[in-house]
Structures are given as C-alpha cells and as structure tokens.
Length: 377
Image (cartoon, rainbow, N blue to C red; front, top):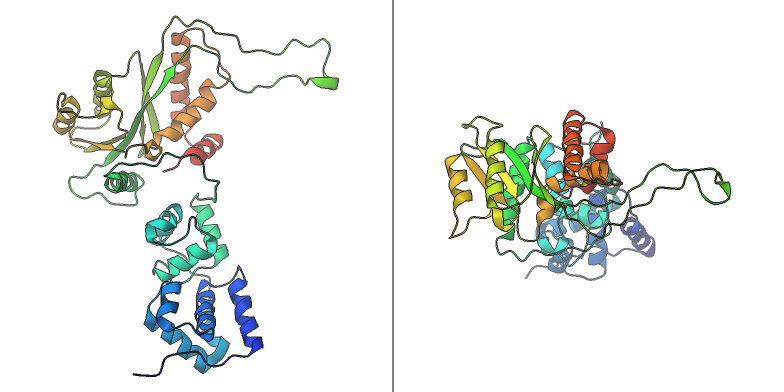
C-alpha cells in the first residue's frame, strides 16, 4: 500500500494565512477551495473525506496537495492570463440562474438556502464555470433579475408529475424567449392563460393624492374621500379570461359572466385566430377543472388536437409558474386599485382600455418593474 497523500508540515503563520483565505468573503472561489483542501489535510483528514466535503474527486484533492507541497501558497492562486475578465456565455448564465433559483436539497446538499459562497463553490465543483468570484456572482444574478428574498408562505406541490410538468413549462418559456430553437412539431407560439376575478362591484382599496391632515391641514379643505359601504350586491360578478402572448408581449382578454368549459374553449378559439392554422401553438394554464380533459368530457383535448394546439398544465398548487399572474398584478395596480365602479359595463370598459394601453406601452418602466417584481417564473 502506498503512502497516504498528506500536506507537508505547516507552521502557525501558514495556518493563520490559510484561515484568512477561507474566512474572507471575497476573491477567487478556486483559491478558497484549494486553501480549504490544504487546511483539512493539515488537520489530518484523509483524501477521500476531503473530496466528499469539497464535492470533488480524490484525484483533484491529491493534485492540490502535491502542488502546495511543491510551490507553496503560489499554487493556490489560479494562473490567469491578462486582459478583461471572462464573459460568461448565455448557456452558462442560464444555468447559473437556474441553480440559484433551485433549492440546495434538490442537489442533495445539506443546506436550506444558497449563500454566495456555497453557490459559487457548487458552480465550480459541478463544472458550470471554471471560476467566479462572489462579487461577480452577485452582479450576474442582479443582471439576471435574481435577488435574495425573504421566504413567503408557499403551497408545496404534491403533484406526482411535478418535475415533468415544470420542465415542460420552462422549456416552452425558453422557446418563447428565444433561448431554445423549437424542434419539428414543437410549438412556435406560447400563450399563458388564466381567469382573473371574480370582478365584484365594490370599492377597491388604493392610494391617491390628498391634502395633508394634522396640524398642517387647511381648515377649509374638502373632506377626504371614503370607501362606500356595500351591504348588497345585486349585479353578480364577472370573470376576465386573459392570455399573455410571450413572443409578442401582448395581453388579450374577454369578460364573461361565467367561467365554465364552454367559455374556456371559446376563448381558446379566439387565441387560435391570432395565428395561421399551420403555426403550432401552446397554451399554458393551471389545473382548474374547466381547463381539463376528463373521461366524461373531451372537448378540450379534441379541440386542441384538431387545431394544432398543445395545452400545457402547470403542476398542482404551482400556478406561480404561469407568467400571466404577474400581468394580473399590474392590471390590479393600474386599473382597479382605488376604484369604485357602479356597473360592470363601466368596470369592463376600464379593464379593456387598460389592456389597450398596456399593449401600446409594453416598455413603460413602471409597468416593467412591477411585472418583473411579481414574476416568479
């Protein structure tokens, strides 16, 4: 049996220097990983255990130890050529964003959440990137619209086909975003569809400009507006069938009295007329019963097969995967907050005029910021 690979004897100064490298939150991840391997070896940990802790191979650990024994601390620093820092490719950025939005437990790691250190270390260990600094990773995630957020109440999906459905929806989004070229027979156009409502005739809370109160108030000012009390609502409710075209960045909507399978198929027929019949289309929607095909009613499936359409369902309790939810947030903010419509005709007119404005001003900064903040997929 050959002699066990182990780092040479290091003195106190060298040990303190290794600790400073590991505890420092900046600098190269490669240097941090190499220093960690050397320090663990100096503490008597065997190569196999170091490889397990560092999420790498035994051969890689042996190479790091041999290089440190030969060249000292110079071997910890990667030998980069001069010039500007490396620019990450689009597939690399997409994979980094995907991993950052996932849970560490999905990769069999014993962590509840990613830190910049753990995420950068994992990306290098998995070969996603050769090297990335913590600050570089922070900047990349900010550019990709990913931020470190507080966990909110969330329904965990128990759908047995969760992974397959989620992967299919994300693949359709990649096609719509232009990140993936669709294969033969795959959809070229992707709609996100859902119902918004019920639309009640009641005052909606909101904000408005008003004169100040307190000691600075004008004694002759008019009283502030108050939300009226609504004890009886005799006019029923309405429902907005809406669809978001990811490729054209346009919103479409029809207001109906009921939201049953008949109305759903009618709205799908309208979406079909927006493109030639030869263009294959996908409609992403949730598992609400009128959207589904059952043994007793195959109207949805039969219509989709006859009209070159794929109905892609989000997993159970995962409607957040539907990108139209963020559009509903903007609709509520711009068109409904602070309103008090006395008839469904007036309310419907307000919603239709908002949709026209939204499609003509899709690049509005406030609109894009609101949708981006609300979009979870």
